[in-house]
Length: 356
Image (cartoon, rainbow, N blue to C red; front, top):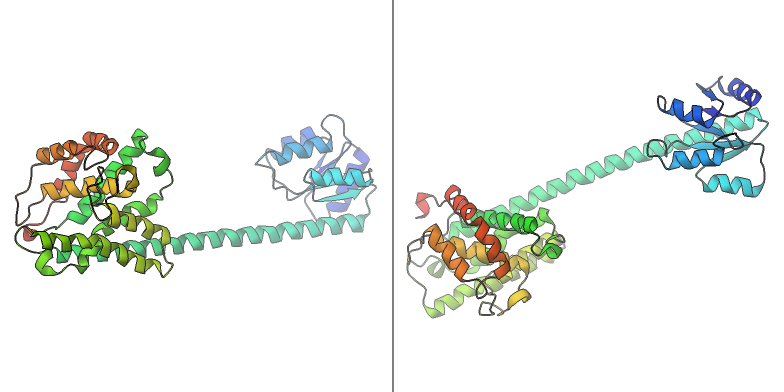
């Protein structure tokens, strides 16, 4: 598009350019914007000194409109001072051609700029393809990560005959709690920093340390003795150590950081009486405080060789009574709204008969 209020310049420019390009010869900026509503040009040749909207004001409009800001603009003008050229380039013009036109120079300037635009388009396409490729690879890695986590969690569950379905149920409880916390604006500052692509898939690793516990203790058909319980408690430390060994490979660092928080702190208690570190209140990472409710609720409703399963109502009551002692009171308030959802999750992902 060639924009100039001088009819002679328009005629001369169109005569030169139409041998090689489709040219729209337009007498004003108003006509330019009218035609831009229907046609997107590869390049605009824009006069500066025009009545109404001059060239400088016109390019400001173009560069502030997402529909037109990528269209290259070359100023064509009788002005030839350095300050005039600088002003035009500062406003976003890609080149500056003086009138009257020198045919060979004008054509070469346009050819060079169109070649540059073509190369930029190819580069954008390459970058877009690269971004797409990275996204695909990231998705593959994410899928691999989830497959590994699922496999490790299954190994833990298969070894612990008494806790079938525990992994998937606690993950679902976690999801319900996190969603409601976000909805209610509870711990919003912390939750907005979480990567939700990692946080929930990391939850199943909270009991990964049980792999290190012997079968005689892990599957004892009776309540554990005091010394046996002390050994069982080491699954927290063992779980953290296992995840730290994974971290040494420098792979999925953020994901493993969440997993380590789950594994290392889900047995801590709000009043500081938990293990392994006796953390208190908000010293306990939020991941551990949320998982504590999910983990205990599931333990309560699950049958063990040494106890019968509590009813959903009894489990709900025990969680609520544990507010401000075992559990974070703010999260317990959220749990109250989700008691029916927890019960539904427990029903959907109940233990298989073989696990009993």
